Length: 195
Image (cartoon, rainbow, N blue to C red; front, side, top):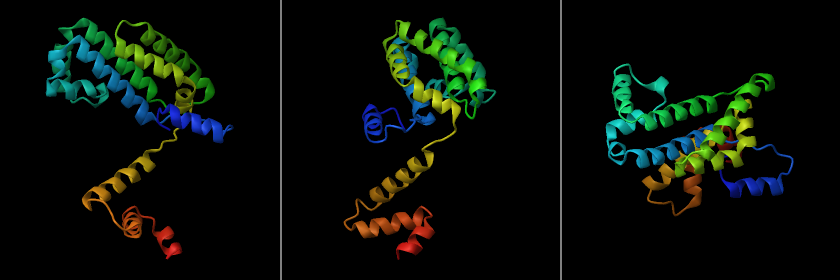
């Protein structure tokens, strides 16, 4: 699930034996969101530069060779921002782990807890907030590193369904909407059984 306290409470109440696993996409998106807020505090002018924004959002492994010197020259002008950027990259690399055994995961969990504590002790408010949130969800995030489950398929279907509704300016007839979803989302077996 995503990092919704409401959903977590509902699951704990109605499915007390369920083990909650956070969704990797939402965790990394949260890290990036708070990093961009911290960047805004450290360099409000640079944060408005769309070219820099594109470079700072990406994981360093996804940068093209010609983009690396541009990013490095910008970070060299602000050493505190460079430190925060490198921390974010290390955190995202750690959060990108999956399918680890318990033994393999043990040192990474210790590293994650250490990074969360560092975030909570920083002077930048967005990073403190990030540290507090990750601390509240550390068990679920630990399970995320252990397993490769994702709600990406559900999110994809939801995006398609919203797109259908927007294109039609809303469906007045739910039956027509349902048929459109079944036709486009590839649920042929369900469509055949129900009709």
